[in-house]
Length: 355
Image (tube, rainbow, N blue to C red):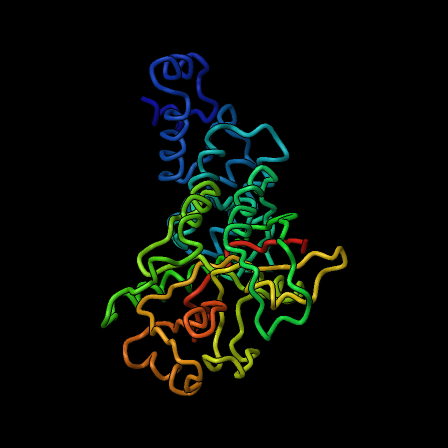
């Protein structure tokens, strides 16, 4: 009866609507009518949705069928414009949410990432798969990051420190890194390494960030650490921090002078990462990246003078990372090295001042 009414009279009788709305939830009726109209390629009743909004719904439905990320992004942007210019029916909101969740599913994005807002940030020029955004973390969460920085701080300086050792570090602001391409690459690489591992994960149980990592991630709304993963710190200049967050770590720019050879170095202590943040921003704030890192099978090196060429080569013998245990050698710090940027993904840019 409903189908015939739609086909024969695009303006459905108000009484029929009243009866149907009374019997079923309004959205379910709207979804049924939309499905019927889409299937029969006819205009939906204007009493249900305006012609402009119906056009957006058709584009959204087509994008959902193809599953093409670029089409989903374009459809979502157009639909949001249609929603924002007029009072949107519940059906349009439902379709927008459906497309946003399809994008989330395709890229396996964390639940706290606002897909619709990311699309707006990227616009039409930046493909969703390559987009990145820095989202301010609520001030109420700063205490969690302060705890991480304070509890992992040690009054120990190495020869790499070029300024006096501070008495502590004070967190001023934090930005969450929402980098779609980096997150996707990381997930694929972790699966590849986990499936092909010879030795299995061997992340140190006494890692200094461990007891704070999962609680912090959960409160933000990010997945907890998986097997073989660690939350570590990477100190760099304020300029580089932004470049890495919106792009990626570049191994070509890494110096080969480190004890572990040419690789990406991460710290478990805030005082250790602070040694490499000499260039502050105009406000005098230093930047450290809080990074989810897949360490997997760790090659533990407690040699005071290791072979810089041999350590990277050990990745071909079943290891996934190197632990430079300078804490055991001379009482300073342990540092972790990886040789593939896909084994890490920055979660936060943490801005702080030295006390």
